[in-house]
Image (tube, rainbow, N blue to C red; front, top):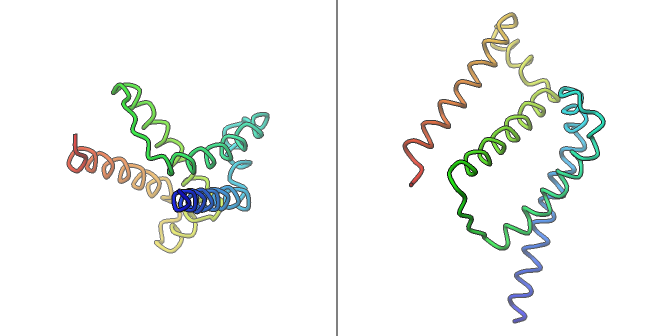
Length: 139
């Protein structure tokens, strides 16, 4: 009994530490305010912030539980779509904050074709994701 409590405590503490680090990382880089500027939803900034905090706490808790969900395919597709949008927007916000694309385009010597670079990355990500899901995901 004591061993299970210690494992639960360490797991929860580790999950909260990782979640807190994630939230701090987003806060230091100013990703959420920049995202609200780009989407013109500044009045919802508190909702975005609470969503990130609650997402970190809930995902920490769920990582301890190892849940198994059985969703209909249409709902699973919607969840996957929203998850992909979140990851894509997070990556885009981080690269914008860190000025990765302008630096990369300048080093590659394609300053004028930065849109081509962005589209190549987008299509590469889509093709890679489709290849992974079609060939490597067990049904």
